[in-house]
Length: 264
Image (cartoon, rainbow, N blue to C red):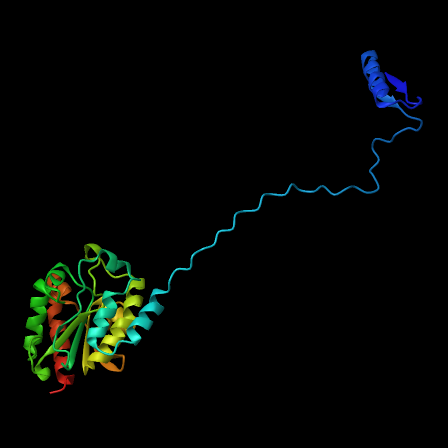
């Protein structure tokens, strides 16, 4: 049903009443003068604007401190071993320090020609506040004695100086992470510079990683390398020698090489 739209103008009230009346009559279409092509496309379509999404909140990330650079800065200004120890004691960028009971720094004669570097303190080391204690330390003492050295000797020519890459004990005696090694490496490099050893023994994978950039002592042992301008002999750690006594033969050969190169 349709209705002619040729009607005089209405005010809005009259128009609304007329529309309501037409709806009651059943009007479904509005008739116009000209036919409408319902299939024709408009000449120009208005662009459909996407509904704008609310802007995501801006999150400002807090920059994580560069622990390696902080270690370089702290170690670089240390003029002696006491200052280096104090720098480690106040270094807050390594997570190991937060859960560690104590700092294990060194043992032996700091004027010795031989410097032995291990991986990290164990339980016995923390109790004694010295590196290489317990069963592993006892074995190391026997190894040093076999080539005429001892950590407690006052004579630098017959003594040895002992330390570790990490001054704090890792939880559960786990291996050091790459991040921890990288963070402690500047302190270790400064340690070597201050002690001025003639020869260094890198005991175990962590020491090899920190000094030589490779963490496999099994491939490196028995061959001389250099780090911080000092000859380095990679050797199996005493803890691993206790687990694998057959490796003591190779360790003895390495000790003889160290003895031959050590100053008299």
